[in-house]
Image 1 (cartoon, rainbow over the protein chains, first blue to last red):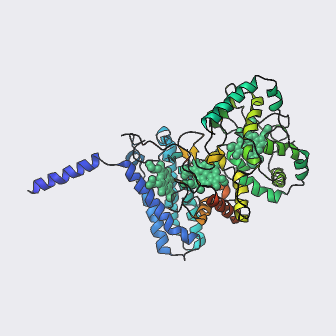
Image 2: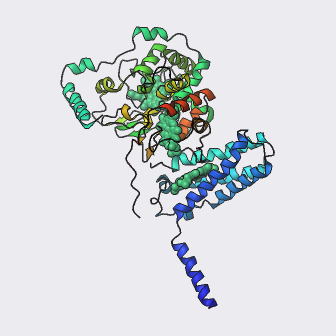
Image 3: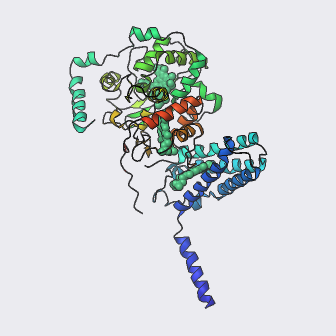
Amino acid sequence: MRNLLLAICGLAFATSAVFADPIADRQALMKANGKAMGSIAPIVKGEKDFDAALVMDALTKLAEDAQKMDPAVLWPVGSETGGDTTSAPAIWEDPAAFQAAIDKFKADTAAAVAAAPADLDALKVQFGAVASNCGGCHEKFRIKKG
Amino acid sequence: MGMIGKLSAAALLAGAAASAVFWVATRPERLPAAIVSELGAGDAGRGERIFWAGGCTSCHAAPKSEGEARLQLPGGAELNTPFGVFVPPNISQDPVDGIGGWTVEDFANAMMRGVSPEGEHYYPAFPYTSYARMKPQDVADLYAYMKTLPATPGAAADHRLGFPFTVRRGLGLWKLLYLSDEPVVDFPAGAPDLVLAGRYLAEGPGHCGECHTPRDMLGGAEKARWLSGAAAAEGEGIVPNITPGEGGLKWSASEIADYLETGFTPEFDSVGGAMVEVQKNMAKLPQEDRDAIAAYLKAIPPHPNGYPAWQPAAN
């Protein structure tokens, strides 16, 4: 019985690996990026009071997400099209430049966590540095398809 | 333009090219004296705002340059279009390679009529089809501001176009069809000043229609589907519908103004593609200008998407 259960678990694991959906996974990761930015933007705009704990949570989340951006896992060959992906062909045509954009995002988010902004002015600097990565990467590596 | 319109325009081009009328009809039109006299003395401070609204650096800055270097304006980027590759020229203050030797009248003729100091037509890859709607005073202010920018030596490469597009004279007919200094969207009397200010910025210096409006067979903007989105002129993908119509923008005016300032959508998706440069320029304008453009986008006629529905790849 126990073996059977293990076998079923193993099977489930195997199928989930086979049917892993990198397009859905990378979109979920990006949505999380958006959510984290959205949680601190009202503070940056002065609509909400500075909240150090909330800010650190969001920056840490962004840094963790940046670490998860492994092109081999989330943008494997074969996932250029399908679903409603808006990833640009440039990701596969110029993988070195894409990796460089990811590395910059990793460095800037890690630096923001390390800086641990303690007030609004410090946050504005880090927010600006992190935010420039979003448009910076989307400029070349993402296309709207309508 | 409908199919009949397209065919007759094509026939017009073909027929006219063969006749003597062609030579007269395609003569480069310089600005009338009345407009030239309105140019006045420019103010460099005011001109800086027009410079960012006009997005000159998007095409004329050195590719990949950052910060202060964006103001050197040596040209040299490559615009890949169905007509060939256009290379924006050096528009720095260098007297030989740039426009340092130009008078304000030369400059205004280039911006508002697409005519060079030598009396030749410019290609509409230089968006004078939009700049033609600018106020003479704003053009003079822009000229004064550009006078404060550096002189950068070095001529940009030539365009790489195939025949018949190499013949500049042929653009005269195209201009007869598509060049106008009239506003595109007609608002009823009493429309709010904010909306009219936004119309001026968006249809004139901001040249939003150059990317966001579908083009007909001859490459002219389809004004009946103004800002309804289009297939991207360069590369793949689409430029979104920014009218309030089906498939278009559902954001509030303040959400639109926020996007132009920060590059984030209300869902905290981030700006991408060719809009990144435009948004960076919009962020340099005063808040009231972004509010005006937002008010205009909320007030324009709604249209369904100006590009064909996307067919998801089967896999």
